[in-house]
Amino acid sequence: MSEQRVVIVGAGMGGLCSAIALAYQGFHVTVVEAADAPGGKVHSREVNGAQIDSGPTVFTMRWVFDALLRSVGTSIESEMRITPLQVLARHFWPDGSQLDLSADARESEAAIALWSSGDEARRFRDFCKPHGNFTPPSKAR
Image 1 (spheres, one colour):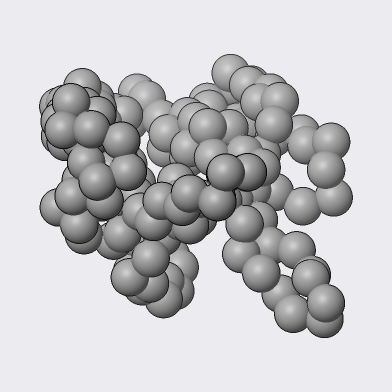
Image 2: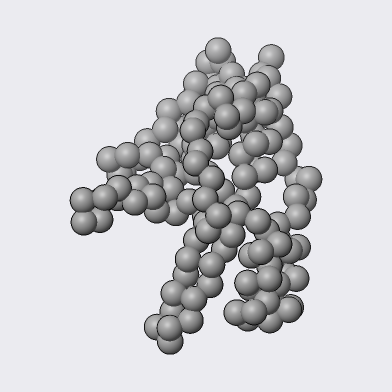
């Protein structure tokens, strides 16, 4: 392990992903978090006695996590248990309108087109395209 030390402030998705990549490169990584659990936006909370996942929409871009974990020699399937859901997020507005985002990007695109416009649906489609800008970390020497 490297003698170089890194402190990451925040155990949300960005902080945890950074910790994985830096530790793989050989840095000694310390993650500090103000909350009593890691996850940031991705967490669960109790509502009327039931545990409810909060913030799982971050996995609408699962390929980012697939690429990160593959780059450090593991996989999502090896590290966590994921229960797929068809509806990833249900958004409500005060006027009563609703938008569901689906595990199927084409279904989400169609829902966005109906809820907003074809232009917004195209923007969503472009947003979902892997941009190839993920550079896997290399091992520190």
